[in-house]
Image 1 (tube, rainbow, N blue to C red):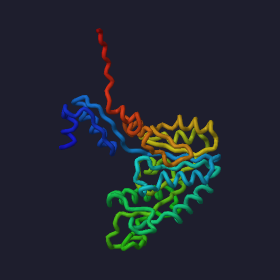
Image 2: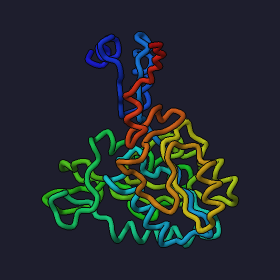
Image 3: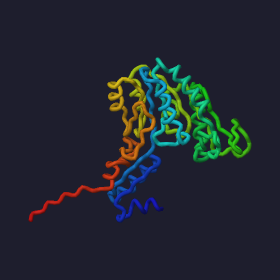
Image 4: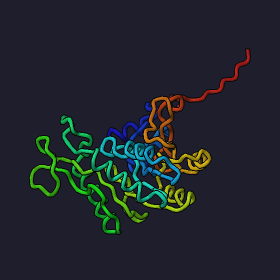
Length: 282
């Protein structure tokens, strides 16, 4: 009711929304009745490409940052990890070790906590379904893969009958393919599937094979490749050798079904301004 009122009222000149793509599409339809200016920051399915010339320590830090902050519940979080075949096995081992040794599901008030809960039980169920789909299609869980039971600052795994909360183990899956659910949907949780690729062209093709285009990432030491890839990735924001790309002075937003308009910096201010031309003869 409130949403329809905001969309239909002629007193409201501009609407800005951050949320899901289906809701964003509904808002666009409703705002058409008043030709209202609108900004939308919607869903993502961010690819992270690790080339075989990358500094793997830098790549690991960037992947950990871009994927697991806020338990993976970020619109620009890495959703698909693409690793060139020459370093695939080595990087898979590095990532598995880092995730299993550094990330701990625990109550946020506990000193050991590095991964908090998902937003609700539906999010837990969605994550479990993504893991199950990956495994059914030939993927291998190298760490994690199930719910965490967090009770009284204790952590166990499995199907406990008590109230589990909404925790899920940080999960790495190798042997991923583009047919798996995380390549079709935004997971929005601490799951990262790894797919291998041979060439730069193949990596770009996989990265752009999505209706979303909010953020993308790549790691390489080759400056020429960095420019080529940053231009070729079909997203509103690209991080090169960095997994933390959000700054208050930079334009934040996506392309395709990830939205229209920008937030942040001067571009964000311009979203709320109108250009007026005045011709005056004195």
